[in-house]
Length: 304
Image (tube, rainbow, N blue to C red):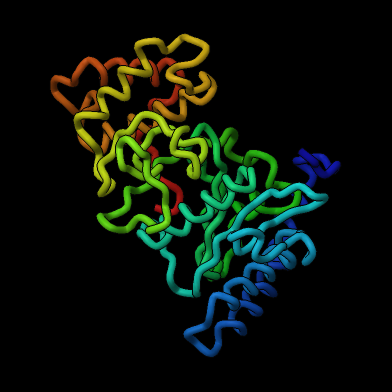
């Protein structure tokens, strides 16, 4: 992967230092673009171009529009860093189904182009994530109307997009909010056997290739499948120390286990929630504790 040559900490300090100067100018442009009301998706795209060129240090030529089905692809020196799904201003909000749908669209387009970072925005909220271990990893959730610039913008900047956040260390996997019944995109592929979308599987490295999805643990309406969840956990932990488990690389297993544990926690099945947790949940808790990941089970999602 191409990387700028400036030392990471130096570029981070420089970026944070210039935010108080670049952010007010961006807010002024954003306000001007939204002054009429009921703006189109093109206005949201223009706001994002202002953000990426005026604040995040990319050039206008780094933003490519309508590449495949992707609204914006951020690229430099032929390397594609980020797919952005853009929606009309005022239509996306954290933890709402519309944002989840936009994220799912970006994920499909990114998989088609072999891009490992995605984002969705309506010109106000901007969510970004890495695709890793068959799931999503928080990169940033930014309110673009905030009068104070978030330092998380570093994670989308020219010098920060290919690095972990230096202030918080290694990024950790998130568990997406389940979509309500009927909210899944109509063109989303379904698994031929289970008739479920990728979001219902604990491991889905390519959302356009159902054959790669493993460990169904949610129902079609997004709710946790109480029968399949413990089976998914058992199928992983029964041979946990193998080089691969059910075709999942061992390096990806921690993220998958955290995802399953979040679902179990949401159902009140993890110790010490349950007075007599099933053996699968006890073993899962022990493995996560050994790996120092137990706290991730209850960690609030970015933007919550």
